[in-house]
Image (cartoon, helix red, strand yellow):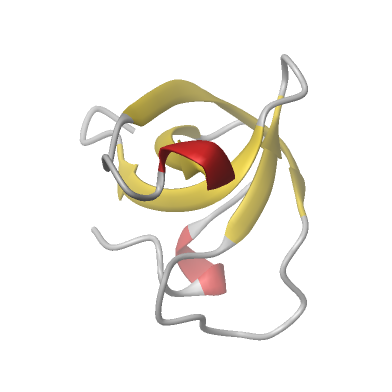
Length: 66
């Protein structure tokens, strides 16, 4: 499931995000969504979220076990 649609993302969801400094390499960071930062319904590069540990990034993957 892509992370470009805000309706697919809820607080408490397990996701993989790309942080701003990792955009060139595409390195993904796993975590649990604590806050949704993007206000629009969709974003072509992924919905921006804050994870429980304070990391901010754009959702690239939603863990399939959810």
